[in-house]
Image (tube, rainbow, N blue to C red; front, side, top):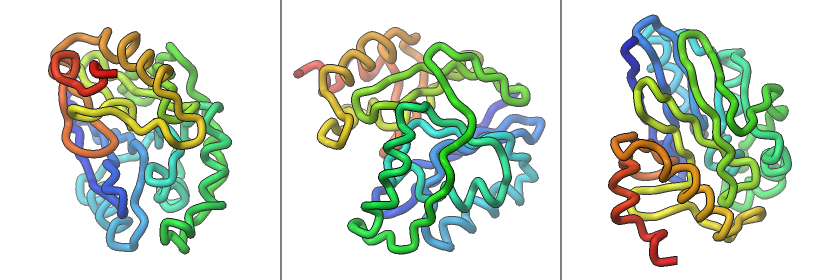
Length: 215
């Protein structure tokens, strides 16, 4: 099964929204951050032009930049949405502070009805995805590991040369370090890491060079 990972950089936070699709036309949207009409169109046009069927919407966590497009995407594609229950509070809090960042048009969407838990194997269409709970940046943060294709949709735990901020509610440096060293760094070195911001990297590169080693 051939899998293609497409990235869209959305909103003022330059958040990475991913569409993972296979050669059967099945697709999963990760962390829809589209906010403007142009951004919404860019995502929906890509789905339609490639004749993709959106099977699910998966969230790594519920900070504002990763869910700005939740209402649009969930209403348009009517696919089940998945979030860890420990980020339900994070999700609901966005409506109270979106205006502070200038997102006056933010639309609160109901909390995703599908739960993800640590160690779960998600079978969505032909996709088989391992879920790991990786808190430290957000209480309910998870990563999604595609073992067959050797890549991770990693959200904001690990970045190329850096790591997720820990000064937001529920953030904790020691917990984040545990998520990185005890979970992410246990994957094979060649595993590609698709980050919530910035370029992709690999587990091997980050084990050698990431700034987290200085803490």
